[in-house]
Image 1 (tube, helix red, strand yellow):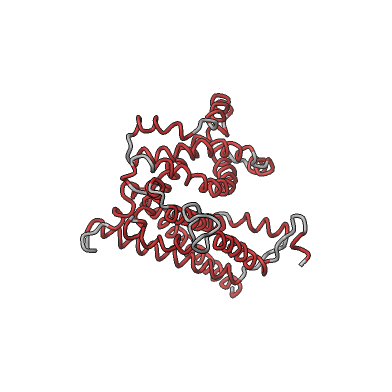
Image 2 (cartoon, rainbow, N blue to C red):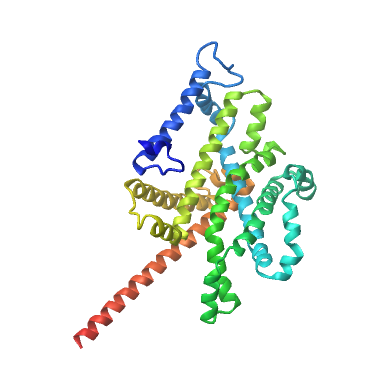
Length: 365
């Protein structure tokens, strides 16, 4: 067990889960000790006990529309990211690739990063009012000003050996952008977006405190904070953490799905080809089942939005409100990607069968 105290030592795979669970358990134990008893070390108003915190979820589901508020915030998050990416990617590639635009705007973009975003809320209220469009654009702007310089930086980090290779085979500018710059930048940018998701929830809380009647976890946080309901506040914070962990795992899975070469290169460099563990296999199967189940539920609920066969209740509209469009965009993108993947796989199988038949025919002849 000497590896436990090695400088920058690696944690063996068989101990990783045990240490993670022990860390969570240690935090819960300290929390329990500090809040235990009728006269705890820390008052219930300052640190409510774990029992009170987890018991408050039931009350918030029935009295504070916790489920609806959660999906409202998720929809706002999706909408902000969709708009931010639609702004960031084209502008970032134009500034990063062409010297004229880099000279015109690079310094300006760097300077905008120092603008305190919370101070801009009044401007967004003037421009968009106090409803969902304001909150989506506020969140998108917050993501945009941090992500845009990163896109330019990722373009600068593209290795010259790839550019020289495509130039050698006669690629034009568009072919170079499509085959070198876009794959290289996007494979790194997904990690940057994954890190930024944690910061985006801060902006959501700020935005949702404005016109809190529209709901959302930020609005709910504002309400329980004003009522000094510390147990509910802790419960909402734990929910934020839970959502963040799910988002992080989804991004990790998307990274492996869209850019598998990153992991192949890394493993080949350091540890050879690493075989999938039983946990990886279980998680991949669970993720696949989750995706297809979500698609099936989405199709049913979308049909219900038009026909209303579920008792006249439009579930998606109830859950996401005015940010429902963002959920539609994400789900339609997933469906298109899945259909394309199935078609590509089927084409590859047909090509393999045709090739094998041609080889067999040549051998017989």
